[in-house]
Image (tube, rainbow, N blue to C red; front, side, top):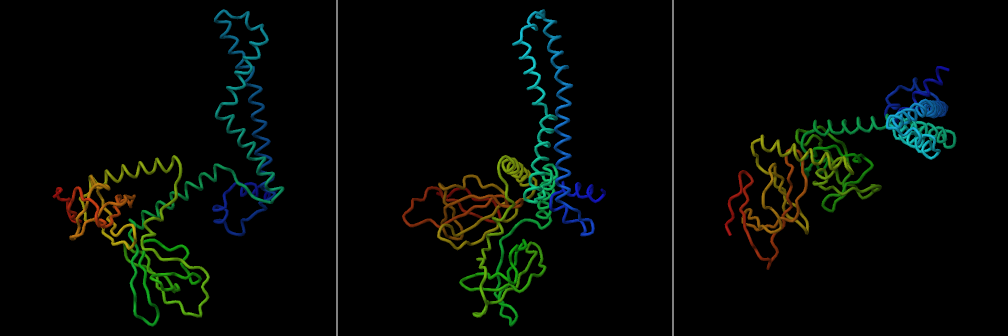
Length: 342
């Protein structure tokens, strides 16, 4: 009996919580799911019925007393009025939050029983899955803040008998192990190991050129800018809300924090040649303005969202020949932009 009760408790938990328990505390999840699902479904369904049987006479009586108080007691004898009062009471009861919750859990329990009986699948309860999801998101957010702002990766060629390339990154590479092949500048490399680095590049990967006899299983192209795009996925209303909150926080931080130098990274590509990450919004930087930097003229090709310290990222490309130049603004990474010169 105790083993069945323990299995019922375990069956409600999401997988990440069950994995934290030692093997000695495991239980019969299939029987536990069937038992807990039956209890959940039957208890919630009976509660809905019992509450309805107590609520209906009381609510109809209240409606009748209100009708009598308004002098419409003769209308209570009409069958259509009686039916309407019962219908209103039933709709009010079914729309109550507690009733909706009980109906959901009765259906959830039935689904859990069917899944465990037919496929042997252990389905937990939705509130605990929602709590586990929030805990996971908060854990990722804490780990992200602990590692600091994201910066582009850096690659360094090494002339050593042990390895040929070092890659400095601010985030751990999920799939980089001895089984993967990394492509960088038309050369294949195998990953030897990972070492601890210094902020902002907390991880250092050592790679060596892949020998011709090595079997290539999976190839991953190394992109120094990929870490800047690999953010936590969000969708829907939550994404809109968090994006708005992060933007407001970034503006408040920018107002309270002294302006620092921008980050400038050359980008090799057909679309853009320069990436500028800044802690402050640059008014007027759009496709109509021309930016002068180190004697070259650029146009703003795209604006993206950056990190908390550098929330504004601008992609620039050189002005193509023959394009009309309207307004030119000199760009200084260590200070405010100069006023337009043309």
